[in-house]
Length: 46
Image (cartoon, rainbow, N blue to C red; front, side, top):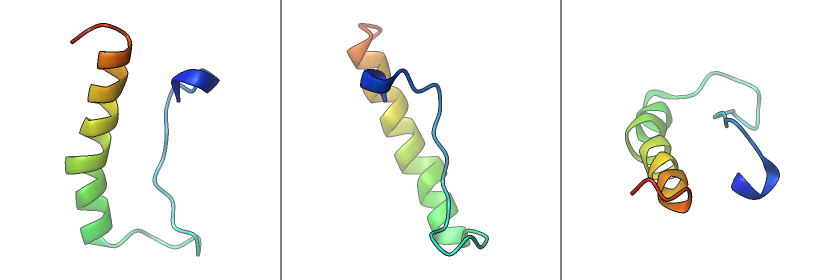
């Protein structure tokens, strides 16, 4: 993300449907916080 000046990212289904609860929960509780942490570390905020 940092190499491409991305300001966000989204979760999408390859089939275009709605995400299941397990995938959405993992995205919200594991993936997003890990990416935020990595960005903060890279930007020297940790």
